[in-house]
Image 1 (tube, rainbow, N blue to C red):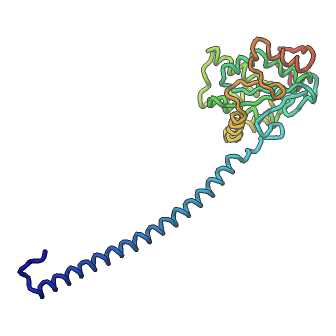
Image 2 (image 1 turned 30 degrees about the vertical axis):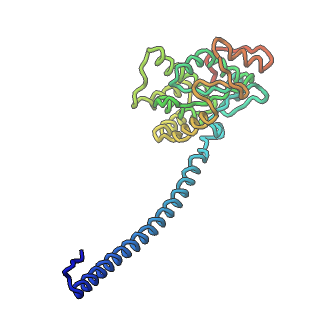
Length: 288
Protein backbone atom coordinates (compact mmCIF):
# COMPACT_ATOMS: atom_id res chain seq x y z
CA UNK A 1 0.00 0.00 0.00
CA UNK A 2 1.23 3.53 -0.82
CA UNK A 3 2.02 5.65 2.23
CA UNK A 4 1.16 9.37 2.23
CA UNK A 5 4.58 9.94 3.87
CA UNK A 6 6.60 8.19 1.06
CA UNK A 7 8.82 10.37 -1.06
CA UNK A 8 8.43 10.55 -4.79
CA UNK A 9 11.59 8.50 -5.27
CA UNK A 10 10.36 5.81 -2.91
CA UNK A 11 7.03 5.62 -4.74
CA UNK A 12 8.83 5.21 -8.09
CA UNK A 13 11.06 2.48 -6.69
CA UNK A 14 8.04 0.64 -5.31
CA UNK A 15 6.28 0.85 -8.69
CA UNK A 16 9.36 -0.54 -10.46
CA UNK A 17 9.47 -3.47 -7.99
CA UNK A 18 5.79 -4.27 -8.58
CA UNK A 19 6.37 -4.21 -12.34
CA UNK A 20 9.33 -6.57 -11.98
CA UNK A 21 7.29 -9.02 -9.88
CA UNK A 22 4.45 -8.88 -12.41
CA UNK A 23 6.89 -9.63 -15.25
CA UNK A 24 8.28 -12.62 -13.36
CA UNK A 25 4.77 -13.93 -12.67
CA UNK A 26 3.83 -13.48 -16.32
CA UNK A 27 6.97 -15.27 -17.46
CA UNK A 28 6.22 -18.20 -15.15
CA UNK A 29 2.60 -18.33 -16.34
CA UNK A 30 3.69 -18.32 -19.98
CA UNK A 31 6.17 -21.12 -19.27
CA UNK A 32 3.46 -23.23 -17.60
CA UNK A 33 1.15 -22.62 -20.55
CA UNK A 34 3.78 -23.75 -23.05
CA UNK A 35 4.44 -26.87 -20.96
CA UNK A 36 0.75 -27.73 -20.72
CA UNK A 37 0.31 -27.20 -24.45
CA UNK A 38 3.26 -29.49 -25.14
CA UNK A 39 1.97 -32.11 -22.75
CA UNK A 40 -1.52 -31.81 -24.20
CA UNK A 41 -0.19 -32.29 -27.71
CA UNK A 42 1.82 -35.31 -26.65
CA UNK A 43 -1.17 -36.78 -24.87
CA UNK A 44 -3.33 -36.22 -27.94
CA UNK A 45 -0.78 -38.05 -30.06
CA UNK A 46 -0.73 -40.90 -27.55
CA UNK A 47 -4.54 -41.08 -27.66
CA UNK A 48 -4.55 -41.19 -31.45
CA UNK A 49 -1.91 -43.93 -31.51
CA UNK A 50 -3.80 -45.88 -28.83
CA UNK A 51 -7.03 -45.52 -30.79
CA UNK A 52 -5.39 -46.83 -33.95
CA UNK A 53 -3.86 -49.75 -32.07
CA UNK A 54 -7.23 -50.53 -30.48
CA UNK A 55 -9.01 -50.48 -33.84
CA UNK A 56 -6.42 -52.80 -35.35
CA UNK A 57 -6.53 -55.10 -32.31
CA UNK A 58 -10.35 -55.12 -32.29
CA UNK A 59 -10.46 -55.94 -35.96
CA UNK A 60 -8.01 -58.76 -35.46
CA UNK A 61 -9.97 -60.16 -32.50
CA UNK A 62 -13.21 -59.88 -34.41
CA UNK A 63 -11.65 -61.70 -37.31
CA UNK A 64 -10.44 -64.41 -34.96
CA UNK A 65 -13.87 -64.77 -33.38
CA UNK A 66 -15.80 -64.89 -36.64
CA UNK A 67 -13.36 -67.05 -38.55
CA UNK A 68 -14.86 -70.57 -38.61
CA UNK A 69 -12.91 -73.21 -36.74
CA UNK A 70 -11.57 -75.99 -38.91
CA UNK A 71 -13.98 -78.92 -39.05
CA UNK A 72 -12.53 -82.17 -37.65
CA UNK A 73 -13.18 -83.98 -40.96
CA UNK A 74 -15.39 -84.15 -44.00
CA UNK A 75 -17.79 -86.20 -41.87
CA UNK A 76 -18.42 -83.23 -39.55
CA UNK A 77 -19.88 -80.00 -40.94
CA UNK A 78 -18.55 -76.54 -40.14
CA UNK A 79 -21.42 -76.19 -37.65
CA UNK A 80 -20.58 -79.46 -35.87
CA UNK A 81 -23.26 -81.59 -37.52
CA UNK A 82 -22.50 -85.31 -37.96
CA UNK A 83 -24.83 -86.81 -40.55
CA UNK A 84 -25.64 -90.52 -40.32
CA UNK A 85 -26.91 -92.57 -43.27
CA UNK A 86 -26.73 -96.06 -44.71
CA UNK A 87 -23.49 -97.96 -44.24
CA UNK A 88 -21.76 -100.36 -46.60
CA UNK A 89 -23.56 -103.44 -45.32
CA UNK A 90 -27.23 -104.17 -44.65
CA UNK A 91 -28.65 -102.29 -41.67
CA UNK A 92 -25.41 -100.55 -40.73
CA UNK A 93 -24.75 -96.82 -40.65
CA UNK A 94 -21.89 -94.54 -41.49
CA UNK A 95 -21.02 -91.06 -40.25
CA UNK A 96 -20.83 -88.61 -43.12
CA UNK A 97 -23.39 -90.51 -45.20
CA UNK A 98 -26.71 -89.00 -46.25
CA UNK A 99 -29.86 -90.66 -47.53
CA UNK A 100 -30.85 -88.37 -50.38
CA UNK A 101 -34.44 -87.16 -50.48
CA UNK A 102 -35.28 -88.54 -47.04
CA UNK A 103 -36.35 -86.55 -43.95
CA UNK A 104 -33.45 -84.93 -42.10
CA UNK A 105 -33.85 -85.42 -38.37
CA UNK A 106 -31.40 -83.27 -36.43
CA UNK A 107 -30.76 -83.73 -32.71
CA UNK A 108 -28.75 -81.17 -30.73
CA UNK A 109 -27.80 -82.95 -27.53
CA UNK A 110 -25.51 -82.85 -24.52
CA UNK A 111 -24.44 -86.05 -22.77
CA UNK A 112 -24.90 -84.21 -19.45
CA UNK A 113 -28.49 -83.15 -20.23
CA UNK A 114 -31.26 -85.08 -18.46
CA UNK A 115 -33.89 -84.50 -21.16
CA UNK A 116 -31.39 -85.44 -23.87
CA UNK A 117 -31.08 -88.71 -22.02
CA UNK A 118 -34.90 -89.05 -22.04
CA UNK A 119 -34.99 -88.44 -25.78
CA UNK A 120 -32.20 -90.93 -26.38
CA UNK A 121 -33.96 -93.63 -24.36
CA UNK A 122 -37.18 -93.13 -26.30
CA UNK A 123 -35.81 -92.75 -29.82
CA UNK A 124 -32.03 -93.25 -29.97
CA UNK A 125 -31.80 -96.77 -31.38
CA UNK A 126 -34.89 -96.33 -33.56
CA UNK A 127 -33.53 -93.23 -35.28
CA UNK A 128 -30.14 -94.84 -35.93
CA UNK A 129 -31.81 -97.97 -37.37
CA UNK A 130 -34.08 -95.87 -39.58
CA UNK A 131 -30.96 -94.17 -40.93
CA UNK A 132 -29.41 -97.60 -41.52
CA UNK A 133 -32.46 -98.65 -43.54
CA UNK A 134 -32.23 -95.49 -45.64
CA UNK A 135 -35.50 -94.04 -44.33
CA UNK A 136 -34.03 -90.85 -42.80
CA UNK A 137 -30.78 -88.96 -42.53
CA UNK A 138 -30.01 -88.61 -38.85
CA UNK A 139 -28.03 -85.48 -38.01
CA UNK A 140 -26.36 -85.49 -34.59
CA UNK A 141 -24.87 -82.34 -33.10
CA UNK A 142 -22.89 -83.18 -29.94
CA UNK A 143 -22.62 -80.22 -27.58
CA UNK A 144 -21.23 -79.48 -24.14
CA UNK A 145 -23.39 -76.49 -23.25
CA UNK A 146 -23.75 -77.57 -19.61
CA UNK A 147 -19.96 -77.48 -19.30
CA UNK A 148 -19.57 -80.90 -17.72
CA UNK A 149 -16.12 -82.28 -18.43
CA UNK A 150 -17.29 -85.83 -19.12
CA UNK A 151 -19.66 -84.51 -21.80
CA UNK A 152 -16.89 -82.37 -23.29
CA UNK A 153 -14.62 -85.41 -23.60
CA UNK A 154 -17.39 -87.65 -24.99
CA UNK A 155 -18.34 -85.02 -27.61
CA UNK A 156 -14.72 -84.79 -28.74
CA UNK A 157 -14.71 -88.60 -28.98
CA UNK A 158 -17.77 -88.26 -31.22
CA UNK A 159 -15.79 -86.08 -33.63
CA UNK A 160 -12.79 -88.39 -33.68
CA UNK A 161 -14.75 -91.61 -34.19
CA UNK A 162 -16.87 -89.95 -36.90
CA UNK A 163 -13.59 -89.09 -38.62
CA UNK A 164 -11.54 -92.26 -38.11
CA UNK A 165 -14.13 -95.02 -37.65
CA UNK A 166 -17.36 -93.64 -39.16
CA UNK A 167 -19.08 -97.04 -39.34
CA UNK A 168 -18.91 -97.25 -35.54
CA UNK A 169 -19.95 -93.69 -34.78
CA UNK A 170 -23.71 -94.10 -34.23
CA UNK A 171 -23.16 -97.18 -32.07
CA UNK A 172 -20.70 -95.23 -29.91
CA UNK A 173 -23.10 -92.31 -29.54
CA UNK A 174 -26.06 -94.41 -28.42
CA UNK A 175 -23.90 -96.66 -26.23
CA UNK A 176 -22.39 -93.72 -24.36
CA UNK A 177 -25.86 -92.46 -23.50
CA UNK A 178 -26.96 -95.93 -22.41
CA UNK A 179 -23.88 -96.93 -20.40
CA UNK A 180 -22.71 -93.60 -18.99
CA UNK A 181 -25.39 -90.89 -19.08
CA UNK A 182 -28.43 -93.03 -18.23
CA UNK A 183 -26.95 -94.54 -15.02
CA UNK A 184 -25.96 -91.04 -13.86
CA UNK A 185 -29.52 -89.74 -14.19
CA UNK A 186 -30.91 -92.93 -12.68
CA UNK A 187 -28.54 -92.31 -9.75
CA UNK A 188 -26.99 -95.72 -10.26
CA UNK A 189 -23.57 -94.17 -10.88
CA UNK A 190 -21.88 -90.90 -10.09
CA UNK A 191 -20.44 -88.49 -12.63
CA UNK A 192 -17.03 -89.78 -13.75
CA UNK A 193 -14.13 -88.16 -11.93
CA UNK A 194 -11.67 -85.89 -13.72
CA UNK A 195 -9.18 -88.73 -14.07
CA UNK A 196 -11.81 -91.11 -15.50
CA UNK A 197 -13.27 -89.06 -18.37
CA UNK A 198 -10.93 -90.31 -21.05
CA UNK A 199 -10.97 -93.93 -19.86
CA UNK A 200 -14.79 -93.99 -19.84
CA UNK A 201 -14.94 -92.78 -23.46
CA UNK A 202 -12.28 -95.29 -24.51
CA UNK A 203 -14.12 -98.14 -22.79
CA UNK A 204 -17.37 -97.34 -24.60
CA UNK A 205 -15.55 -97.09 -27.93
CA UNK A 206 -13.93 -100.47 -27.33
CA UNK A 207 -17.30 -102.05 -26.44
CA UNK A 208 -18.83 -101.13 -29.80
CA UNK A 209 -15.84 -102.50 -31.71
CA UNK A 210 -13.76 -99.46 -32.58
CA UNK A 211 -10.42 -100.88 -33.85
CA UNK A 212 -7.35 -100.76 -31.63
CA UNK A 213 -5.41 -98.40 -33.88
CA UNK A 214 -8.29 -95.92 -33.72
CA UNK A 215 -8.50 -96.31 -29.95
CA UNK A 216 -4.84 -95.38 -29.70
CA UNK A 217 -5.39 -92.24 -31.73
CA UNK A 218 -8.50 -91.41 -29.71
CA UNK A 219 -6.48 -91.65 -26.50
CA UNK A 220 -3.93 -89.17 -27.83
CA UNK A 221 -6.60 -86.83 -29.23
CA UNK A 222 -8.50 -86.61 -25.96
CA UNK A 223 -5.29 -86.06 -23.99
CA UNK A 224 -4.45 -83.07 -26.21
CA UNK A 225 -7.99 -81.62 -26.15
CA UNK A 226 -7.66 -81.52 -29.93
CA UNK A 227 -11.31 -80.71 -30.66
CA UNK A 228 -11.95 -78.46 -27.64
CA UNK A 229 -11.93 -75.20 -29.66
CA UNK A 230 -14.20 -76.70 -32.33
CA UNK A 231 -16.64 -77.88 -29.66
CA UNK A 232 -16.85 -74.30 -28.35
CA UNK A 233 -17.38 -73.09 -31.92
CA UNK A 234 -20.27 -75.55 -32.35
CA UNK A 235 -21.90 -74.27 -29.14
CA UNK A 236 -21.64 -70.68 -30.42
CA UNK A 237 -23.22 -71.64 -33.75
CA UNK A 238 -26.02 -73.35 -31.80
CA UNK A 239 -26.69 -70.17 -29.81
CA UNK A 240 -26.37 -67.94 -32.90
CA UNK A 241 -29.11 -69.99 -34.56
CA UNK A 242 -31.47 -68.93 -31.78
CA UNK A 243 -31.58 -72.27 -29.97
CA UNK A 244 -31.81 -71.99 -26.21
CA UNK A 245 -31.37 -75.44 -24.75
CA UNK A 246 -30.85 -79.11 -25.32
CA UNK A 247 -32.28 -81.26 -26.62
CA UNK A 248 -33.38 -79.34 -29.68
CA UNK A 249 -34.99 -81.32 -32.49
CA UNK A 250 -35.53 -80.18 -36.07
CA UNK A 251 -37.01 -82.04 -39.03
CA UNK A 252 -35.94 -80.67 -42.40
CA UNK A 253 -34.86 -77.52 -40.57
CA UNK A 254 -38.17 -76.96 -38.76
CA UNK A 255 -38.02 -77.09 -34.98
CA UNK A 256 -40.22 -79.67 -33.27
CA UNK A 257 -41.40 -78.15 -30.01
CA UNK A 258 -42.80 -81.35 -28.44
CA UNK A 259 -40.97 -84.58 -29.24
CA UNK A 260 -42.25 -86.64 -26.30
CA UNK A 261 -44.54 -89.71 -26.24
CA UNK A 262 -43.95 -90.78 -29.82
CA UNK A 263 -44.57 -87.36 -31.37
CA UNK A 264 -41.13 -87.25 -32.99
CA UNK A 265 -41.67 -90.42 -35.04
CA UNK A 266 -45.22 -89.35 -35.85
CA UNK A 267 -43.91 -86.10 -37.30
CA UNK A 268 -41.17 -87.90 -39.24
CA UNK A 269 -43.80 -90.20 -40.77
CA UNK A 270 -45.84 -87.15 -41.85
CA UNK A 271 -42.81 -85.72 -43.62
CA UNK A 272 -41.86 -89.09 -45.12
CA UNK A 273 -45.41 -89.66 -46.29
CA UNK A 274 -45.63 -93.25 -45.09
CA UNK A 275 -45.50 -95.48 -42.03
CA UNK A 276 -42.04 -96.23 -40.68
CA UNK A 277 -41.02 -99.52 -39.13
CA UNK A 278 -38.48 -98.56 -36.50
CA UNK A 279 -36.47 -101.16 -34.60
CA UNK A 280 -35.31 -100.49 -31.04
CA UNK A 281 -32.43 -102.98 -31.33
CA UNK A 282 -28.90 -101.78 -30.66
CA UNK A 283 -27.36 -100.30 -33.83
CA UNK A 284 -25.54 -102.82 -36.02
CA UNK A 285 -21.82 -102.45 -36.70
CA UNK A 286 -19.62 -104.13 -39.31
CA UNK A 287 -18.85 -107.81 -38.70
CA UNK A 288 -15.28 -108.68 -37.90
